Amino acid sequence: MPTDKLSINSRTLSHKLMVLYALMFILPGGYLLFVIWDLRNAVLDPEAVQMLTGISLHLGVPAAILMSCAAFTLMYRSMRKIHEVTEEAGTFYTEIHGTTTVPRELAEESDEVQRISHYVTDMIGELRRKINDVDQYAQDLDQANKKLMEVAVVDGMTQLYNHKHIRHLLVTELRRAERFSHPLAIMMIDIDDFKKFNDTYGHLVGDRALRDVSRMLRNNIRTVDVPARYGGEEFLVILPEATIDGGVLVAERVRQAIEEHSFDTGRGIRKSHITVSIGVSAYEGAPVTDSDLISQADTRLYDAKHAGKNKVISS
View 1 (spheres, rainbow, N blue to C red):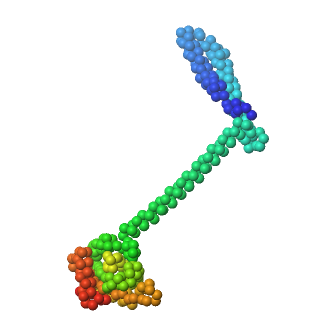
View 2: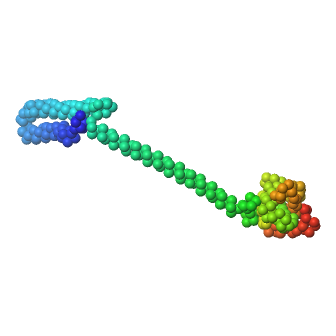
View 3: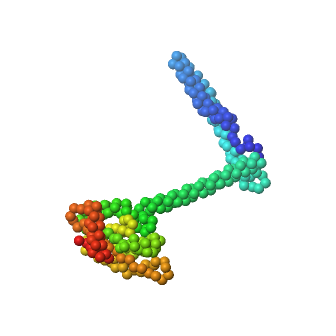
């Protein structure tokens, strides 16, 4: 089907519409001017009134009829052209959905549209893959940040908090206890004669013993308590909401659990035992700093050492 049959000649249609508008406005305007001219003559010559009526009837009525016929003709031709284009568009639509009458140009354009569609689909798929890659990268980065945070606050040997972080947590817990007038206790723990243990069994066995002590420490304190490796073979535990007596109860439970545990020395069935000394201090309303609490607990820890080890001292 020729493509020029599928469109209206806009220039021809616009010309026809312009003529139609001219007939609708120019002819009545000209007739009106003619009547005004005759009225002027009638004012100047009253005898011309009868002639004016005759001229108006002889010229005005035919002019109105001519204008109406011209307008009807132009409108009919325009509507017929639009109707023809509508029918051709319907035929063209039918041919598009057929199998043998699709124009070659249209088929080529259709193929091009399909190629563009496939290209866009591929681009969307690639974009989705990139988004998935970015999402995976974000997850990996989040995991890396978490690991980095763990390295910053967790002791690699025992998997308890390290010295720096436990000091920060102690300051926070002490401020909270002061704000709400709640008690707060801490305990300092040191493994008795650990240097001798390392010298006897070696540092690998000593490292394993540190991990075992850390595990028993976690298993014998409350869920709200916060344990940390303070340094070497020394540990610090924060006991929120605990009085000095409550801190002693937890400390005794930890001391007894470690005393009763048999540590594997890595030499067949040979086992060894370890004991700990513990000092407990607490905030119970009197003004105190985090350093004061640690100093008091540390002093009581060494009092326990001097008193024969494997003891808990709180005063």
